[in-house]
Length: 524
Image 1 (cartoon, rainbow, N blue to C red):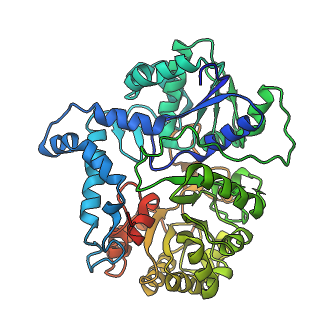
Image 2: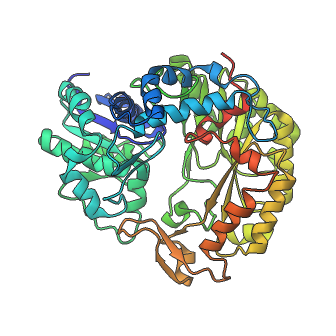
């Protein structure tokens, strides 16, 4: 790898159970044009480095977690941890194998969290700093200036620096996809600027795209970052090297950088995107709708051709489609094939999925879990949202998927501007009615996208104090205020005897990323 022109880094911290899809696609685009690059998944590396560095054994739990760290890591990668009656939960929502799984996850998490000063909050799924905000540009700049106090600084110096010195790149790209990565990504940029002053820094990724889509964006990071990239990075990065790709040019992701045996999952998970943006793009509550992102799908035959190539090269056990929603045409193409891997992804409630025979075909193709955004059990609320979901169809979909043996991970959104407590009760009733067909539940309380059309007609205030915040709080026009919504969700919805067991079987920290393994019971 010595002499690579470009180094791509995926920074901590987030769920380290699969490689990052975005940098893999960018690496594939560069490889296609014979441009040398190196990729480092620092998320996985840094979390393991922190966990193994833990020395603060203040109590029995921490001592046990640090002493048995390697065993616990090995168990999380072992399919046998997820076997048994994992999908057959008892009345209290627990299975015979879930207690052991949960203990392993929480012990590894304890080893990670206990290594840090109380100022920092680090888990296997998130990172936070009590003194700095990831949505305040001045705090991100401060994180860059004071990089030596970042909890990952020791990892930068001990592990990352030798890798960068070996590569000696002209450009260093940092992919920032999630808010939990932001503070460390900017500390990383500040450290790079100090230690490798000749390198030019590029930042891109989903979070950067959201910030740059704001009409108020004025690039507060000019003195630190040489190039900020909005949207797909392939075109912008290729142009740095004098390449002007055809607008219809498509690339195959390159996962050669992966430590496949290191990720915290019971097999190789290959993440793949079949399109950019959402084919529906009409949901009023969605930040992407407010950002006006364009939908750019790949042809199903091209995606399946990529799948065949990637399977021959990397032999994945699972394929995770990371689209906002898989299109009906792609699902039909998948249903027509049988694959060697198990797959899962996000879909909408469509008429195809209400057909038991179609769902059976998806199962034969390898589908074992689908994630679905129901949001509400009140049809009037769904219509106001622009969801395009019919509750009668949704009921048929849940029944057909259950019959086919495909697990469902259902998302709910409470407190939207058109919802009332009566509407929330309808959601509760709907979920109770379909509780035997719902595998897992995610409940969230609505945050208003800052630049959405709906924000113009509401009395709003900052949800997070910061010039980069993507959301607003608002005075509910129907009196269904956030405090009341939270009380309903916590005291009424979550405690219902038909719903509580569903919520209890959600994998801690890893949630939907491990849910399928819990649902089907992975076989060694």
